[in-house]
Length: 298
Image (cartoon, rainbow, N blue to C red):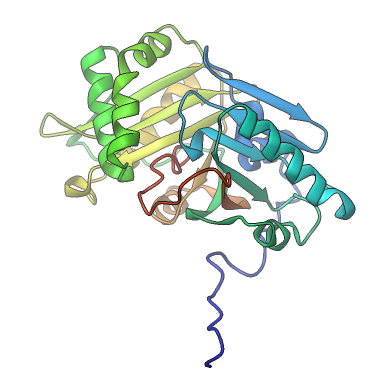
């Protein structure tokens, strides 16, 4: 019988060392964004010295996130069992665990995999920070803050297209779109933006205002418009909006596609996050896209 082939890890072997000059609260926002994210009307956050669990409004994995893991080596198994039991009880049968570079113990990723978790569909993100003005976007790309339900529905459609959501997940998002817009329109903490090329909405991104900076998330561009500078224009628009609110620090968790773009715009890498999918034993496994991961991407 041939020996099994060992697959390479879906993330680099080493970890990104946080810069020594970076403020601890900014690093925390970059590594554990949901700890600082203002809670919406349907959100909840469970905070324990060993972990933080974010419970968002959706049912799929990216809306149930376990992060800021600070475990002793002898308590990993019991803590995982404790969190799993709580999330099963709440009907959160699919969830993600985010192992940041500050997580303990050092071999936590491997131990979580041994306990039945697996790399998420998008298993690796890099925390990035910008503290100076980026280059402006192209002159032929229009950007604006979302101010109408029509614009919001356009942004939802862009995100669903870009993230490749399954039909089930996409329908769930559409079903609550009007309620989500009502919440967003009245929020002082969150602002959605869209970019248009030739008058057509082709990209979207969100600013979430935290105490220490502005978190960029939900960045996405439809495939046919990539390479036109829409993503870059949205970063510039959100920087200007941040300055208007007295904020001079943009923070995001970048995936493989946005990471090189953000680096060219002057963002620096400050940490990394390994993302694991954890399914309850009661969930039937499927190959359908998770659709939610990427929501933190700038």
